Length: 437
Ligand SMILES: [Zn+2]
Image (tube, rainbow, N blue to C red):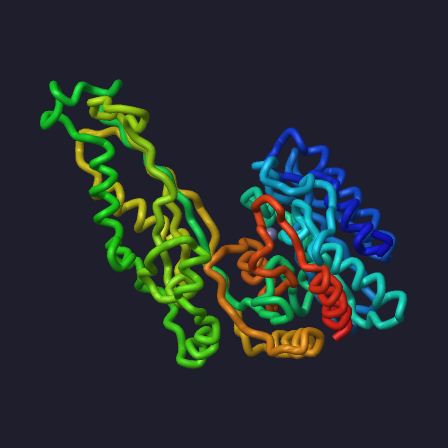
C-alpha cells in the first residue's frame, strides 16, 4: 500500500460516513473535513452547504480564468450501511487488496471515484496540464434520499452556473476495459398504502363472508393497477407522455442485448416477461412488500384487521413525477371499496433524466475513454435513478455525462464491495484527460 492514491482511499474508506445512520453523523463531518483539507491543498476555494444536521454538500472551485472552459464534477462521499457485517471477508471499513481487487465499503459507490478525481487533478496540476476551470460537487446525502441536494445546489448557483459540462461519476463500465456513458435514467416515486377494516383480527368462522378482508382488497387493487402477465400498467393515461425511442436509439441500446440464459442464471430466476429494453425505456410499477395477517407456523384462522402495501414506480422520459403521483393516487382512491379506513402516502420522488447523447462533450469523452481502455465506448440508459442528474440538468441546462470505472459485479450496496485495481488506475488516467480536454 505504498501508492499515494491507495493510501488516500484507505484513509477515506476508514471514515464510516453512512448517511442514513444518525449515530454516525460525526463520521459524515469527518469525511467533509478530510475532503476539505485535500481539496484546499489542490488550490480550490471550498464552500460547505448545510442545514441543521444534514450531510453537507461540498462545492469547490478552482478558476484559472473566466475565459476558460469550466468542468463540473459530481460524486458522493456518503456510503450505504455495511450490514450484514458477517458476510464480509474483510472488515468493511478497512481497505483490503486481494486478487487484483480493492475491498471496502464505498470503494465502488462512490469514494473510489472521488479519490480517482482528486488524484487526477493533483497529477494534472503537477504536470502543468490542467488548462480548465474545475468545479467539484460532492454530495453527502445520495444514499439518504438526497433531500437537500436541490436546495444546496440552488444556493451554490453562482458557481455552478459557470459550468459548461457536468460529469457524474457514480456509474460503472459495461465490462472490464469496456467503458460506457449513460444518457438516460429512470425517475422514481415510492408509496405506501395501509388498509384497516377494524380494531382487531376477527375469527374467520364467525366473520367469514360477513366482512371485507384487507389482504384481498390489496390483491384486487393490484390486479387493477397492473397486468401481471405483461407487466402493463392499467392506470389510465399512465403511458400518455412516455417518450418513444427512435430507431437510432433502439440500435444503440440493442448492443446491450445479452444472452437471456446467462441473465436468468445471474438473477436466479426461471423466466423473463419483458425484453431487455423494457427495464430501460418503459415505466414500471412494482410491489416492494405486502404485510398482513398471520404467516407464522401452523394455522391461525383469522381475518386480518389490516394490510400494508409498499410499492415503487419507475418513470421514463417525459413522464412527470408529480403528474404520475396524482393519477396513481386518484386511481387507488377510486378503486378502494367504501367502508375501510386507509392511509395512502406517495412520495414526491424524482423525475427521469435524459440527455442528448450526440453532444460534443459526450463524443469527446467517448473518444478519451476508448483511447485509454482500447475499446469502443457504449452509450446506455439505466433503469436506476440518480436524482442529482435530473436536478443539475433542470437547474443549469448543461450537458451531463454519467460514467465511471466500476464493474457490474462489484457488490455495490452489498457485502464485499470492491473495485478492480487496474480499472482504478486506468480511471485516473482517463480523468486526467477528461479534465484537460
Ligand atoms: Zn452512488
